[in-house]
Amino acid sequence: MSFRPHVKTSKSTDVAALQRAAGARGVTVSTLLEAQHFHAAGIDDILYAVGMVPAKLPQALALRRQGCALKIITDSLASARAIADFGRAHDEVFEVWIEIDSDGHRSGIRPEQEALLEVGRCLHEGGMRLGGVLTHAGSSYDYDTPEALQAIAEQERAACVNAALRLRAAGLPCPVVSIGSTPTALSAASLEGVTEVRAGVYVFFDLVMHNVGVCTQDDIALSVLTTVIGHQEEKGWAIVDAGWMAMSRDRGTQKQKHDFGYGQVCDAAGTPLKDYLITGANQEHGILSLREGVDRDIVKRFPVGTQLRILPNHACATGAQFPSYQALAADGTVQNWPRLHGW
Image 1 (cartoon, one colour):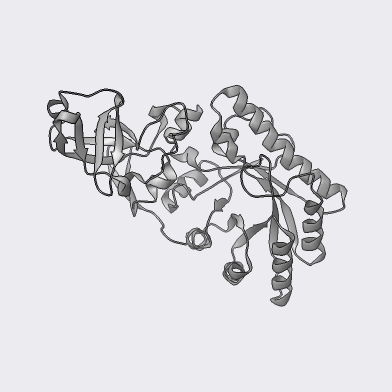
Image 2 (cartoon, rainbow, N blue to C red):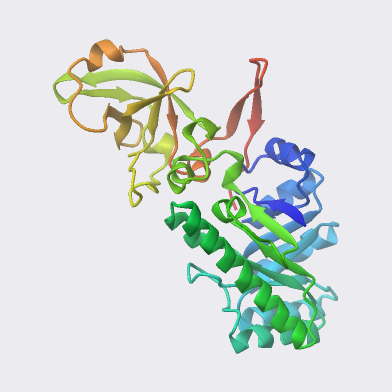
């Protein structure tokens, strides 16, 4: 069993180095630019976990010719044919994994569909390496009890394992069975038949994961430092210099039991001020107010110049607003860790 973290959350080679030091093997990426970036940093085992299209095959080929052990994925016969045709034309054996739909959340082939075997045969008989199957139970974000999370984790595992068994029964190779999301990776009761697990946002956590129930607010490692720049006293508002350009427009907690607006307000040391949220956001202005009611002492409580930290709804989206992280070490020193942007 191995663990392959999804580096789309941090997009940072410094963070990935710590994950690898902790035992991770390989990485998962969401763009080919990420693959190029992490390969340049010395990581060869890379899974590009977004469906391959013909226009991106030359970029994938270039990475493989540079020595990157890039894995690509497909969930359609049309894509599989394009990969096989391009590979043969360029004398390249691509390693391709088939994406499985384990919960109806997004992409993939259902494990019982005939298309699974059609795609497998197309790749295998077309001269490509059929590397395995993978799935992502994205719907796990919709649950918030241990029982429900354990059930969706088992559903994810069973779907992917059953797809692998069908391929093998048809005489097709399927060495890898890859599953994972942060909620299911932390909730699975059994990983029988699975060869690797993937997860991404666990590395920082966020308020969505807090609501799902797989972390506490104290576990959230990412925050945005902001400063009070003014007030609307009669409304009980403090205005801060972190709007949606800092926090992102992601309101992932809005549909959950606890809506955190644009983020949970904390003091500068990171201790949550539980009754205060960023309840509104413009491009560069955030509105800090009570979750409910009006704070008549808002000016005294948060004078102009007060520094605060805001915990994000979605660490991936908030991180994407910044070029680097200011990483705080246990000894109090701060390091600048650059972050990749673009596609």
